[in-house]
Image (cartoon, rainbow, N blue to C red; front, side):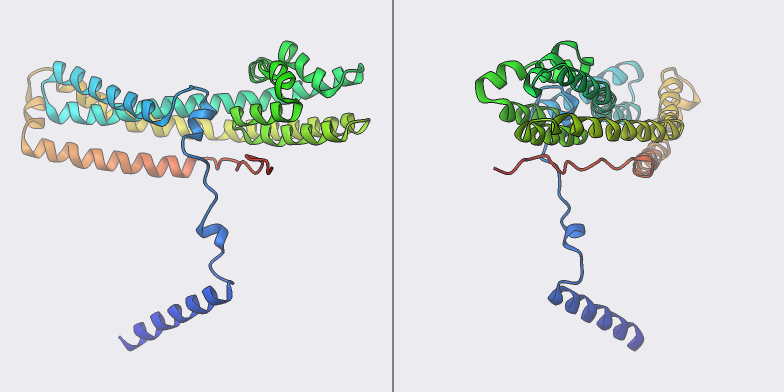
Length: 288
């Protein structure tokens, strides 16, 4: 006991000294910069807020419960189905967000080449961006559709800031910040900046595609392993028989409860292990 008490006292003393001197713990690790609430909805491009989204999640879960309850008549089967259905809107939204982020990432190299070609032909950066909204890659055409009217109303830099906020995309943040600097500097430096930016963005895109390809098989396996047992459970309990009798008993309810907890825990662990860290939005907000 004395040894344990001495060890705890030493740890407490070291933590206190580190906190007083500022050497430990690192403030950035204790207080990570978190994205604004609901930013993932903005990145997915769904155009709804947090409250409508969570209401939609509740409706989906209720519908799943009623459908499975109608066919099976078993609470022990309908309840896990409803819980599973609650995850579906978020999964769909995250897939949509990931797809949109990848589309933007893949579109920027060609978009920057279009800008370089337009500026080389004598256009200003603002005019080249207007042209990008007409002839650029599809994701960038949609993103810059409002640029022409915004730039005339509030100026090029505020228009770029508005588009950056709408996209909420780390790579787009960096590129638009560089465009703002290029616009403010002007002159021959614009082409040099955009050419360097094109090369760097292309390399980033290749690295991202390679990582996504390597992780795809593991993600598919993890999701299939989670879903299949519950599909089988719903199927075997739709008809009278020994399986249905077992899962209406207290032992069956216990098995389903334990299996549900284990499945959720396994899904959480698999998602954490397989999740690629999101790139932080270093240029998410531009100081005034």
